[in-house]
Image (tube, rainbow, N blue to C red; front, side, top):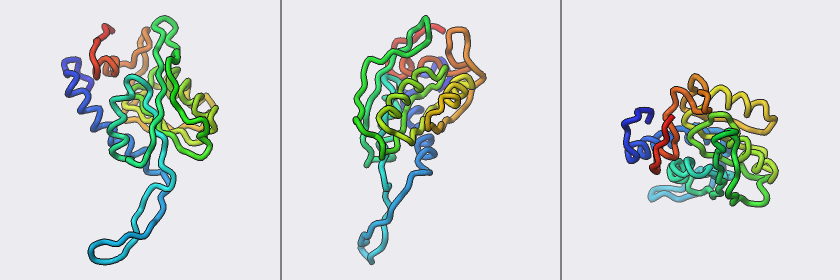
Length: 193
């Protein structure tokens, strides 16, 4: 995924695989419940999630993680938050929110490949907490120490699951060494860094 020569198809496939691993790790703490089933041989107990999460990809880059998360947790529902980064202030601006009004009883998995400054994820998480969510799990592929610190100082009920923590941010607030813009790498429109 990091290689600048990797085409969009390979990048998307790699993101799909890595997301499965990250979401699997995030789901380890979910409560489960037993229910009776009958196999072709005998009755037994099955296991299912006691309270399936709401999955929230941060648009647009988080869309590349959504199918993997739903494949692993098919009983989940999905919401969406659309955020764009202001290239001068590096702060997010929301252009879409499609979330349930009440999240007080539901865990939420937020999908965003990159945690850089933490601005976008913090904005998204505040929307969730404002709706009563007390269990927000952030699933990222890469994270920068600056973003991790910003989220940890927020006081919000967050947990982070990431595949890697990189060195930090450059002067344009991109993760170094990073992998470029995950949305552009998946869907086209390569930026110059």
